[in-house]
Image (cartoon, rainbow, N blue to C red):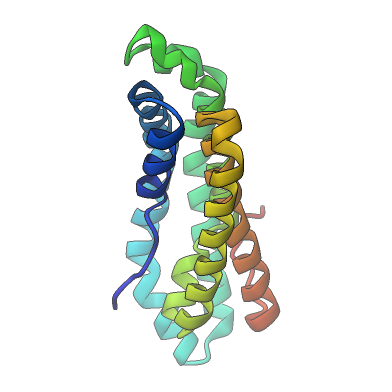
Length: 196
């Protein structure tokens, strides 16, 4: 299975260099990488559950599929929340490890973490699309998200710098996760999102 995605960091790199400085890029890079640490948990869980999702879906075992998605969404959320809360509570302390001036990325880091919170809450949306034969729908959703992302970069980065870049990234991430989550529920009545 070939997974297609767009690299938001590469895109934003061009915008920050055009409208900002290499220092801005360094600050944003650290904030972006810190915020995306949380995605390691989701990737690990997805690696384990992907074959089971496909098996349950194509065997028509929707009850087992819903149970698997429920457990994985709950595990993902509970494991990522402590890290994300830590980043939200101590952004200055964490960023200062990279250098005194890196605290300039405090607000971008907070915004990017909020985007990761949405992603964590929504669960294994992208994986579900791929493992249930909905790749075309997912690629269309990602393309729409990419268009929105580029437009927001054009609008926000010249005015707000790396804070604008963080808003663009967090919004596009939240957008495709929320729309994807809603589509999966509408189509298959599967709730990928976290709930107790």
